[in-house]
Length: 184
Image (cartoon, rainbow, N blue to C red):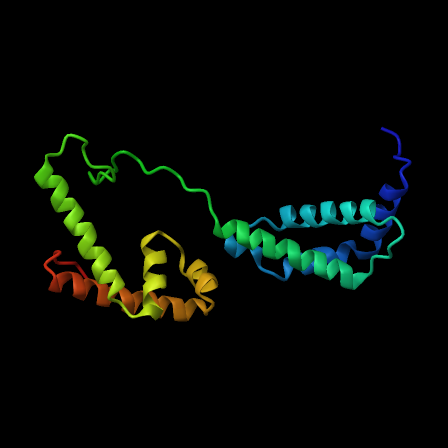
């Protein structure tokens, strides 16, 4: 293929030649891998946004500060997308015999008992102190400690303590209402 004779393409090439290393370094400083985000994907998105900015404003001068703002907004968008993860369907039955979806042929007594257990859990969860309620809810949904920390706005260690103490308190409350015994 021959060289593209497009002034916008040439401007983008010059911009990336001048700031490409800085762009890569800025993306790398955010530690995106711990959130399951590929830094190369973020860098590619930054390049696309720069291309679009060049197309929109053909006379603008793009400096290092503009590159930093584009990187920051792209990283923030990637982190937000990572928080809204796609859910995967649960298996019908796991190796230990647990069935996430009860048999559709359950009688009314069994169904009522299941609903009562859910209501007891909901009641005990709502009785937790507000500071622990969200971390425990996220933990029960399968979020990792770092994800919980990011959502709650605290350190991973603080999130670990909130989850640990909150789970202990939740188990105690469930025992009190007769919802079973738990192995500690």
